[in-house]
Image (cartoon, rainbow, N blue to C red; front, side):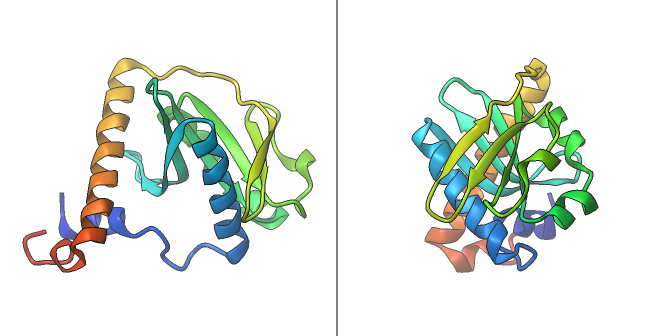
Length: 162
């Protein structure tokens, strides 16, 4: 793994997220935590994509949440079907000002702001294959550990040894 790919895994807020998207992510993360999940924002996937939120349940369930901050954001970004390859359930999360009817019925839906969120529609379950689950769990653990290490020792995370 190259230095740049490790550095990309450590960066959580990279300037691409709008204030609305960051607010939706915070509220959605709070909801998922209350439901027993831990979350990693902006997690790189094996496909080269970056999931807005990846949540891991105590039973190993993997959930991906795609955040859409506006109608334009939803219409311009149609890569979301690929996220199904990496999770058991796929949700969209959005802000109160975005019309909910634009989101596809075959994905879950979360309505969120900076303080919290609620599940408007549950996501259908599409269980991952064992090999894909193992790969995702290893990636999740590695990304979480690298981010924790970067918090506790920022200069080491950016050192030449990476």
